[in-house]
Length: 353
Ligand code: FES
Ligand SMILES: [Fe+2]
Image (cartoon, rainbow, N blue to C red):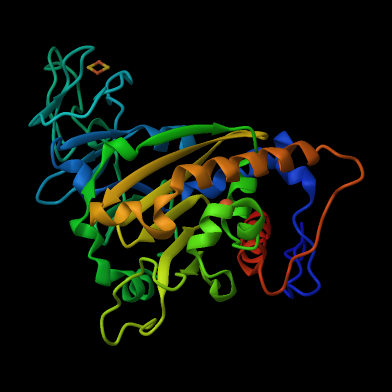
């Protein structure tokens, strides 16, 4: 496939053909896009428990992993190197990891410490007997790992915009956890996220809190940043002097990282959405909430999250049904309102070629 399935000029480009939202072959080819950097957890999730099995990574990549807090926090395989038992079933604060099958024990850095009945084994232990270690990147208190070599994301550029919020100090609020199954291809969820074009039509409540005319979309290598502007008198960020967006009434920063991660920064804190592909026509969306200032959570663009979510799910499930049509295949992009969707489709195009 050429790199030009999606024309680089948005004014001429057509959207992704509908088979990408329905066909099992395309679904399978795109699974590899999930092997790059993926959100694991926020540092606050390692406060009560120091060993955290991360279930969503397995759902996306097939690899069960552990996040382990220490002087040097690590991302380890959660598979016992003996005969493959799942090592840690749930979050804990243990100081060694003992397999429940035959007692193999590991230190928290993944080194094999003890194995019964192996005195006569030759060449044991070897490197393969320690737990596999995956790369781990920490950015403003958020941990990311990757299943294969992946180019680094523009963390510095993003930190200049968002670092003033000190997200590393946010607290984890499990009451905000959600796990929704949506009857739509994961890319329809992303497409919808990447434009504010639909806000006046689909989200009447949110539309009252946001200044639609001022909505901005910025694309960069690896993602998209959207800026929601506050209407007069509503809650907005208190931007420090010298901030790149100083003087603007910003109600929300919506950051998307390829292919499936959404970080929604509001004055009250951060809401994260992780989209997990399940089948060509089904995905799961996990929500996590990290709080900066609880009192602000009832005001402005960040206060109507559940309502907005249901409205989005309704619209993309409707679109999914249409993807099976024999008369609809591709649409066109609004050059002023759908730059994010176009950017995403270009990335998909490049990934496939
Ligand atoms: S599988 Fe873990 S000790 Fe045997
Ligand atoms: Fe929406």
